[in-house]
Image 1 (cartoon, rainbow, N blue to C red):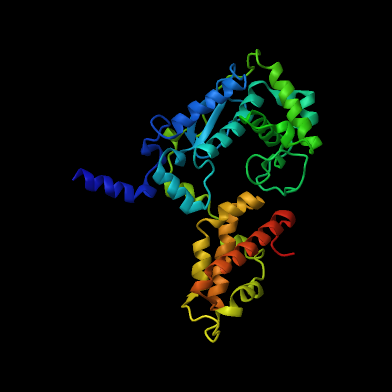
Image 2: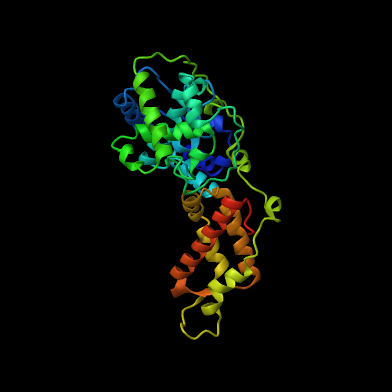
Length: 346
């Protein structure tokens, strides 16, 4: 009877409050990675600031604390897979990615622990921390004023993120950032400022040691399904932004997708089916390349699939690879247009 109950609970995991899942860092794959990261901190000479790690809804450091929140879905393989299925992107998948995100969040910890944002030199390099924080921003992909660490040109989002990204590059083991950014005078100046600042703080006690948690996993009352409901973007909210794609789809599929095309006798497959398959992995890649949020890419792919259905587009099964390349190029171009202009429509 007990195994059947466990199976039923797993099948209905979306109905369970997150606080009832019993999630912890101890005993998971997160634990040895955090231990490795603590070794990186010691090697970088950061011994006076001791961050507190905990599970929450997303990556982050509550302002004025030294507590690093790690997304709860990284604590269990099934939850990680579910997150990938529901959102199309996992921030911190695998050891290397986890360390990359931890280095970034540690930048926030150091900033708040020493109140660096109040220093005149810090403000000159990165800007005022009081600048409005916007979730959506339009990066300059080829700007040499900022380092590149997390995907989506994250340093361009806000002065606090610019510092955190600079710090993360500075502390990355084995990275010769002086050579890496030699031709980037403004980004290099930020790294050199960070290097001088951290050397001066080696023996300094932090001004802030508060490690109060924000939305600790053990206190989150809503369910998994409710959590992912907040990630959804309603199609109606963006109906006016959707681009005219019929011509592009015809260019991809119609030259060799019509039944009367005798250049191949391979079975024809629905184009919409292929597009929906791409929705599993392509959003994460497009985000890394362009900074276009995965949830928006999924909505864009849904729009392409709906139009392909309406146009009754098909393709020969033996030409799936060129179709995927063409679709990837189209989606990436549309994503870049949205990042630069704020709209898919030129």
